[in-house]
Image 1 (cartoon, helix red, strand yellow):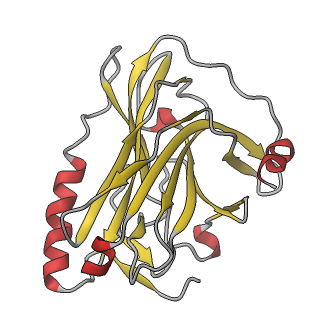
Image 2: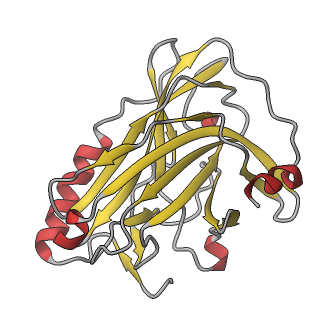
Length: 238
């Protein structure tokens, strides 16, 4: 249940200080976009986390970010996704103590005629489940490696994040959102509700776009685009 919102940095002073330090660490983990084979590229939503929704995550959830790799990465002719992650805010010690498992995936996007935009398709490559441990309250970026999947950076693509925690935790980490729309970064965040993808639309009340992001290397043979319709893909999640 979405009961309240907040701003990253609006926590008590210690948590706010830790969040600022962690932000510096988070964004120093990735190299600048590169154009030569074998060099690291930024992927997904690299904008700074700025807000969250209380109880948006309550123990089991799957999210997706659809984006254009070419908006951030200059790899030609392809980019190989090697890691996917999400920025989470741990507001108190109970959230830190709550066990968390992360799984990620990458896959193509499909056109959603109903909403008039690109939606997550079927994942093409999945990671193994990764147990997550953080050192304390604050903003943490968690990620998992994923097997190589060479994609065409000019076509929309999807990054998937699945979070899993026990239902009896006293508190949970909170997925973070950026500050809103960007003219230079095309992206759409989605949440899996009862095996159906639902758009997290800033125009409909979402505080921004989920901070799901990744990294990759330039590659030479991108996979072919997927021609499956959105209607056919929706049937996979029913």
